[in-house]
Image (cartoon, rainbow, N blue to C red):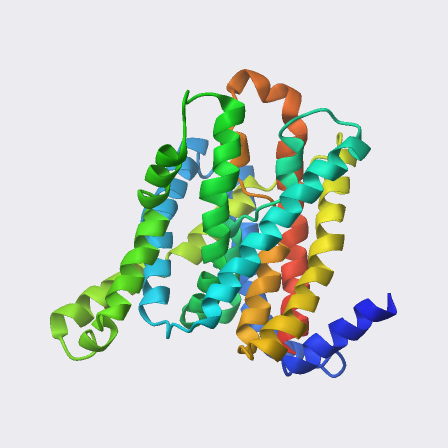
Length: 337
């Protein structure tokens, strides 16, 4: 425990924060709007202001339009460094490590289910991590969590989705070509790749001198700005507080956090701060990712008739979402203090 506290204090010191004497009043204006939007979403459901179909359509709009716009603007302005390849590799290793640990730990949870191990790895970045980070730290800082997310996206599309395809057996013969096709046709991946390409060819400079390019970018930024409020309202809408059969979900969440939070502090202190000498925003981005819930795509690959016997998956995602938001807010006070 003393070692954990040592790394925690050192990490906070490196990020310029203080645990004592934090100016909480300066942080509250960033946190309160986040909570207000969550509450609005929850009220919308209670009052039946929006239907389930409407929420589904808004989700599609976010995943296919506003979130890609947000990531496109982020990668358009990134100054690429060799160190980013190390970050991508580290994030992939973290995900693979958690997948391995999930496989080893599932026998102790006394639950025979091939999907159980998948709840230990992966993080919900698109619908939670990136929007929360953006809500607190602003669109100008999305690039930091965008770099963190590259390694995660590669793991999700080529490892996690591959396992899910195999378990579902919906695509007989689904191989690397299927996964690669899904990867490159994802709006999020397309947005990242286009942003990187235009960055390399110097579009970031052109947009500042060309009226047409500038106008296009301003339009994209307006669309990107819709991501955070819409997602927070949806999260609030979908929040459910069920207390039945929460034993297994709580164990999964606890195991994830007990492993991932100390791991984030160690990586931040030794690798990001001391070896790579990265800005503190990468430290914040990493711990933001590692406290997020498992990916929300997991239930989408489970056959409809099998979902009833796997309610623990939905419970894990729902409870983990509430806990993740709470931890994210706490770390915001610590890191921004």
